[in-house]
Length: 179
Image 1 (tube, helix red, strand yellow):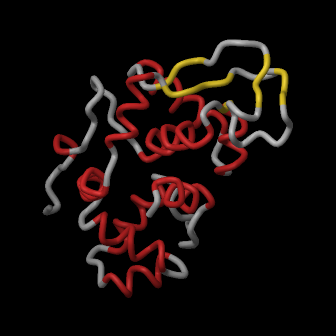
Image 2 (cartoon, helix red, strand yellow; image 1 turned 180 degrees about the vertical axis):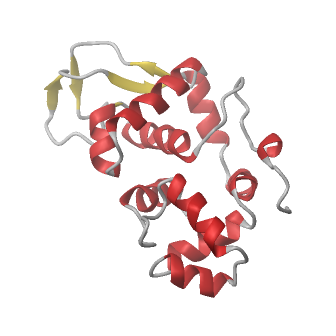
């Protein structure tokens, strides 16, 4: 893809929701965890709680995520919990049936299209960044054009810090997607 506006081509199959990396992360996190609360997702990713809450609300409006009912959560249901059973002191969320089907449909072809729509040669660069020490190293290895613009995009999506280091969010994002 060229430098043209690619937002029209971005995979966003649910209503008018522009699926950002944070949305995608919340979906795959809920797939792995089964049920989770926003504060724990924020703690694990080291992202602001407001950002996680906003992403969850967007996903709820799109019908991909729903609140989990009940007063207690068993470890068999909440896979990331350490205790056998915990009483709910937070609002827990889970994937809706629609969300389950959507996450199941995400494959390498979809991810390649998704990352290439976010930034030029996105799929290739993400693969290089995963294996690189930091952004500067990845930029050299990928022989990327417009490294400054690419760096801004990666900072915007919280994949790297302003110094070029990979974020905890990026590492979990890649791990949960199996990249």
